[in-house]
Length: 117
Image (cartoon, rainbow, N blue to C red; front, side, top):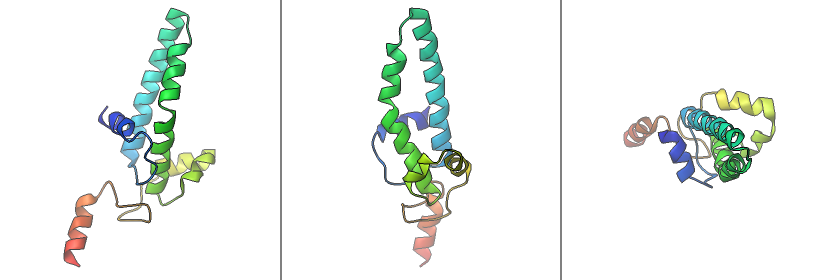
């Protein structure tokens, strides 16, 4: 749940990098809430709860996807290639700093590497 809330706090942040764990935990909780709201909408015989939720998390979903692509060293436009973007989302991110920012997974290593230079 922590990662889901972190993505929502970075509502429209398209720069930087997102770890696999951040991306997939957001996706997991997003699907849980999505299906829960579908059941509520079916029970209440409405469609607006699910629609409001989808519209509310559309931008954070895209932004975390773009940051995930940045973590593997690719442009955010790679999200538009369906199968390849899924493969990239499952791939481990670049070790160390890349052109999109520092490694979100190994921040302690980078501090040690900078201190040794």
